[in-house]
Picture 1 (cartoon, rainbow, N blue to C red):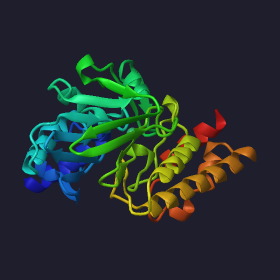
Picture 2: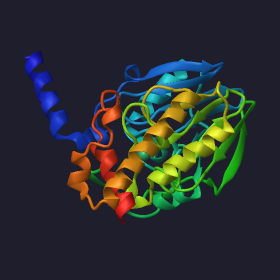
Picture 3: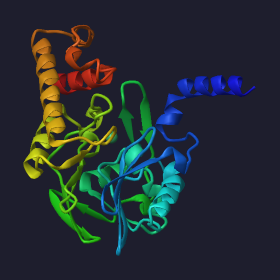
Picture 4: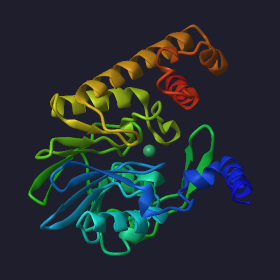
Length: 299
Ligand SMILES: [Zn+2]
């Protein structure tokens, strides 16, 4: 009986990819892996959805990104286990649901939410995220889920003895990405501008652009040093050199696709040419990345 149930649930997961993608699957605190990056400073990894950073200290709890809303009770329990109580401040790296939908629970509960001004603007109107595999509609979010403070180019937050720099370097993964740099901990969270678990997704239909991803990462590399812990939106933490290598990969793939487009190739021909071949053993399924770069370069 258990076996058939397990098989049935696998089938349901495969059939309902969007349910998993929207965080509607069941979730427990034990599904979250916490790793201490520095004193009272943690990364929380989830089986799906974006990475959280958590600062716990005398002023309370500050987190970067807040996952799908159904995961809030689980990560609040996890944070309590680490010595924190509730969440005082949330910084959104951008507005996608797997990074910011927890706003809908935490904002209503009194947390102060901060984001780039374009991210807040996106939350105030209906929009669709085209991930190539799916078209995900987003409703307008209620006022309590919206950031109460926004920034344009840079902003500093001072909390738990840390200076936290929020920096925006133009459109990249979206039009409202923030790099969040904890100067004292020497850690940066790049949201989905950087990814170590798969090829990057570029939200091209909502203004994201591959050239911006490259420029954004180059700008962050100027802000950090070779010892900085570099946190991606998804996947394991990385190093300065990993980010450098990632920029080179994105640039190379972009240039290969641009050359094919200049030669008159259509999307099917670009995919058939496999411009990501050098990295496919490590980063599987490049279709979404290639499709979105092609969209950027042909519109
Ligand atoms: Zn995203």
